[in-house]
Length: 231
Ligand SMILES: C[S@@+](CC[C@H](N)C(=O)[O-])C[C@H]1O[C@@H](n2cnc3c(N)ncnc32)[C@H](O)[C@@H]1O
Image 1: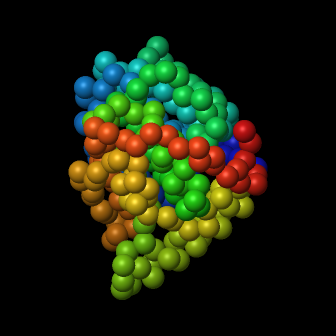
Image 2: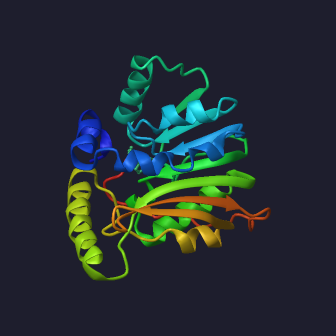
Image 3: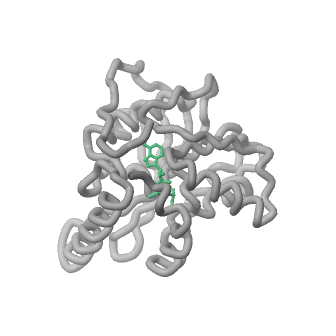
């Protein structure tokens, strides 16, 4: 199982279920990429965010890494259909947990609705791996779902999360059973939170993180491969 089966349906499902909400989160801090030279988009799926990156970062090369070949193929077709040149784009079919990154330092990384695919131990390893592909001062833009601390907003989020995780675990085989806040992993990996925008009654957050100048050397931690993933 993978995201391949979802690829044909991804855009209309998002439009019907979430309207413009998710895209607003993805693009909340995209202007931060204006001066970027090397941007790594992890798990781009078929969202229109890639188009926004190409517009907002006119001098950047953009690497798109996704473990779903169908998502990448459809994304390429979507870009071409909207008249967007893919001359500055490298499409990589691979898994973030095993990918051998090229010898460039990325000055920006984006993970929209991506980190919530991983269970806690895996998330920590993924964030640490990605941090070592970045340059000092690198931006990390991310959007994810979250569960508010209390009240009816918490109950509402719990119901929606239960539905989403059941759906994504069944259709794609993701390892996560619930959302894990990425903050501790990002702090450990040397990033600090610069800005966070919370929306939809606390259900969504869009973040801007920046890497401190120093990140501790890579350890020997190996990611645990979850059942159901292709490598
Ligand atoms: C929930 S979708 C989000 C897509 C897009 N970023 C968005 O905002 O709609 C997660 C995407 O990450 C990809 N993905 C999931 N696990 C991955 C992994 N281990 N390595 C690379 N890509 C992965 C999936 O194929 C899918 O395209």
